[in-house]
Image (cartoon, rainbow, N blue to C red; front, side, top):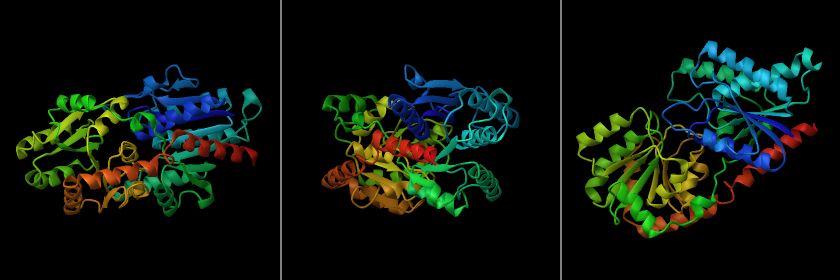
Length: 397
């Protein structure tokens, strides 16, 4: 098959890692794959270098950026159309909000219009969109939510099929009137599992901890998320105020960067917790397995996610997870693999962390169960098998 994937930008993020794994495996399976993307700009770090020396082709559209910009968006739309007309793919597969809208509208327009250069667009072409997360959510202005829902409904009419990274994404889309039930399937967002499943040495763990001033006997609660609004660091800091008094060996490790980094560092300094809450800044993806395996508990308090990759990543490393019960979290976190708690509930968060901090046997038991529960579900071949089957089924119609 001739396949085009379109994503807004290749920053560090779950949607981006998912897309790169998909393109890589589809190309290795013999398909003709092209990835269209915008420039990887921003403080979040980039994954663009991972496209080098791969079997798929890459096209960069300079004006394809995350922020809404009518002029740039119009230019990007016509650029996408131009490349689709040149490539004539069987499948157009879009990811993320901006690329998802522009890519689907461009593919639909070419499919239905007469093209002088090629008597007609590929009328059998199918368009798929992966829902990694939804642009509308409860923590946003209602008018803005209405706008995003209206745009997504319009794009859905130009979409043949949806792939969700969690059942929760399907349920939320359908509840908003986006798509039809028979148009959806779930393919959990793949993780390159080997590096998470391979244990590290005590020396590697000691060196990593030493780098951030963490002692060998500390119990480390790690959070992997951008230092950004709605990612929940405020709730973790609030619970740490209480837990730090009760557990002298507890240390929190924030992995990531963002526009709230200085705010949190100043807040922690004022609370007198600078020696208990550490910051790594931005880490390359290759360092994430080491960071998790050098820790003991994953704490994830984001208020909005599709299904946070940090949760199955921690489980692959044999670590229990404490997570707010949002979106797809409950599809991996349960009483056998960690603790699922009410969003924004600091009291529950504190109690869940305290339970794990004081019981090493429980941590190990939950970690083992978590690893077994996600190994197959998040394997790259599992995800791409589902995606490839969707493509074939659509093209056979």
